[in-house]
Length: 406
Image 1 (cartoon, rainbow, N blue to C red):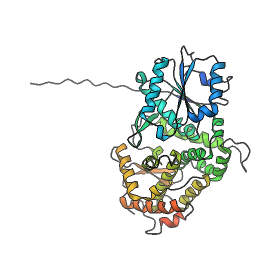
Image 2 (tube, rainbow, N blue to C red):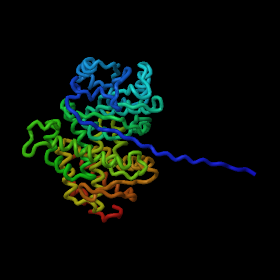
Image 3 (spheres, helix red, strand yellow):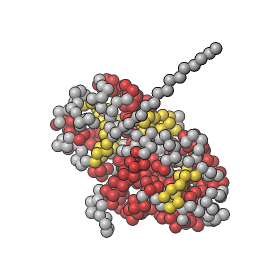
Image 4 (spheres, rainbow, N blue to C red):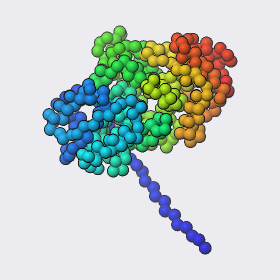
């Protein structure tokens, strides 16, 4: 007679990490960049990874910083952009860690750059010796308000965004908002696309700041340099409220054991579009379009008031983002995008819809006809960003009662 024995192991994974806001980060008088996560002294050589843009703009200052503080470092420069967010690029980082003799704890690499290089280095660190600490310094608005809080790393694989990845937050993230003053306007707009997401799902005050100051935020690179009419400090407000909102949401579900996440708003339909359109669209641009698409779905269900839908599209336009793209106007593409996302959500839609700016609810019953009708609206917005969106939503069959098909 056969018998079986079973052992059950229970373990709790606790992790604490900090996001530190500082100024003049590359000033040798500021110790933050060279500081270890545990506050101790580094006994060996650390790898400093930069993307090409950072190396060009800040490279000399960064090298001077480590020289004057007498810290031993080696450098690696990587290409940025999603086309280079690859497994091979991640392996380059791992190889360099071996070359310089990186140990398990006390020589954590430092990554300085945009979201792509942050994710690549983060994934390498999570796999190297089964996980080593690292320090990240985001230099884009998107990285500072979104990636700075994230626990996830990843690379693109077989045409899918972040298909390979890990959960591996660094013990320390350093934010210096003056670093984004050199960014092109398009990079700022892309970052504001993620800020818009946070505003729509939980922060009406943040939305009102974006609504009022969208174009000025881009022009002034969120530096609050006094070029704003009226109130002062909208740049700082956007950064702080976006980070705080993201941190609040992620802290209660950091490892994504709960698949219903309001922070996935704007990330249901956009991954397929973003990857298919490379390098045409930036991440935040695709997210903003997804926000509009989902807002159209909500408005047609009668969840989101039409006047608030109009405000959302007007704010997207004021920031200088496009509210739509021809691919969002193609219903088969949107249906394929939803099907792919559902595999990531264990077969459920778990679609976040707005029932007002700053308020959400989850639905799991969006129909093919609803997607088709929303795509029709988005196709018009792709041709004319200022088209009357409320009129478009009611042009064929009117607003749809909550829970009903279009």
